[in-house]
Image 1 (spheres, helix red, strand yellow):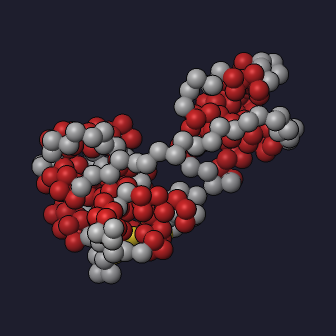
Image 2: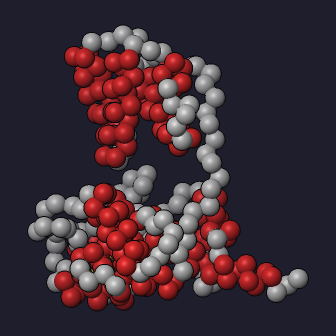
Image 3: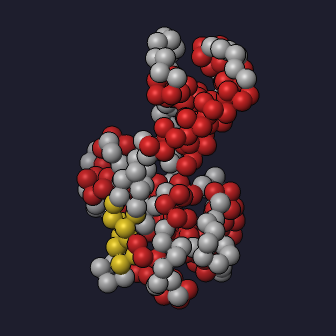
Length: 265
């Protein structure tokens, strides 16, 4: 399918509007828009276009596939009948830090805003996008809960407000309105790259040798809860997982549970 650049822009505008109406996140809208722009201007059919990505990760292949399917079904109204084998997700276990490693990362971070971000990612089990967009009015200091609005899948949920997070909020004077964390003033969020840099530098200061991402702190939060005796249902609720099978991966990561099992044989 060959299309002019002007024609592509019109289709991409319709694509973005459809994604917004269906509640997709800004990140997904940007991702789908980039993929579909390349596809529309390539003049290729879906199968040929997908072949470009066979040497990329399975996650990338899946993202491209779902972007093309959304474009055809919901925007072009042409259906998506190509029998394209969809690569399965790789069953990789995420990296998890020890409690001591996490505490060192947080305690050795002198910048209070950076320390607050690290604490939200770990003690709240928040996703990166949730942590940087969190607003002061979503934090209930009396009930000790955080209201996460429009998390993944546009779902709201409540998570724990850990005492260490509360102390940091009060120290920073974050108790009115506006963003909880912002690099300059109250208007601009931290970018994903900035948060990754904050996490990487914190891991380096703490002497952590593993590769650490913002999501590693969320994985560690869930694993430590399981090791501490929390049940899968409550962990699933705190993480905002739709499918219990997503949460069950942490049963493979809980080191203390492994030690308990080893004593049975």
